[in-house]
Image (cartoon, rainbow, N blue to C red; front, side):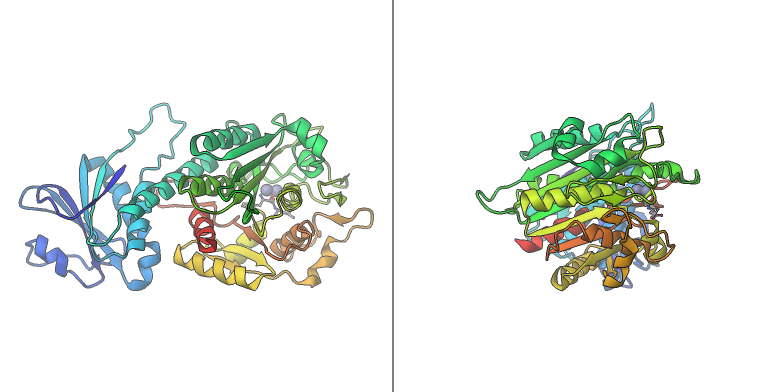
Length: 468
Ligand code: BES
Ligand code: ZN
Ligand code: ZN
């Protein structure tokens, strides 16, 4: 899609008019219908025809509180109408703030996402000229919104891809290709290097799969000689069977999405490079397939880790915290980032706690928590803080190793998982863990089955922008 800033509307071209709830004044200047059956409720739309036969859509923006999800309104309208749209669409956007215009573009771009990547007959990709009327200086945000939307679509395609296509090696290749295209550095550590560098926890999780594990290291460092401002670490389990502590088969196919955290890390580094932000960022993805095999790691095993700490495996389904432990240790030891954030579809427990409404946020840093929370509300990708109380430390006690990977108790699962990760952060003062199991993948209005949400890209990208 191509987005252009215009200062004059064309009377013959299709047009979208925005109406807040109860305010139909602008609409009435374009549509000569006596009684308009339209209230401007959020995401409600109505089609009229202009005197030149052009389509005129009224699009409801609802109340001021709905502004945080304005992208959804544009996405829905475009998704539902795109089969009728050809050539050029105009949007009368003078009532939108510059930031809202950006969000509108993100939504329009997201409407082009095609989930049927593996169908033999693919849907035709739409390519429209979107002309946006505004008297404000919106040109820059049009390109920014397009890049954000494009990146979200790319990471959704990754999360929706099936595990037989999306192996750890495939994720590594994705990152290498992205790095080449967008001018940043990427190194993929394969099995031999992982063994040499002692990524023992990543290796243990991946040893039951024919698809060997990798650790992906991406670096975008435009500030020469500067330190790393932010390090992102992602859980990249390309399929989670649970391992020998096997999961039940209900909804097991959705465990292809257990690399949602990795996808956010890969997407954000790509986006920061595309936007050429002046910040030094490193992304580390620890990727493995948690498979069932005679070679799989077992409950009761004691494994080593990159940090040197030994871990007693109680449950092989608590694999995410193991690969992240190595990812975090490596990030903190090698890059010494000023801030470090990990993202992971880590626990079913966080879904029981917060449902599909927010990610679980864990940090000892009040400033980071406040900022992330505020940005989460702003971009409608919410986070909700959960505690890291020392009370939970006992749950990680092992008699025979330095710690165990699961308490064995059916309580506080998201918290004990976060406490486990904390043990691998060397008490970093600016560490945050986001458990995105409930928000990364789920039901949507745009597909019949569950699919990737794209959650996290706008949240982390805006958080990073706030550091500049
Ligand atoms: N990948 C799962 C967590 C998950 C659950 C993600 C639902 C997305 C949706 C994770 O590896 C897992 O299996 N966690 C277990 C840990 C338990 C065995 C300690 C869980 O939360 O049940
Ligand atoms: Zn698991
Ligand atoms: Zn998992």
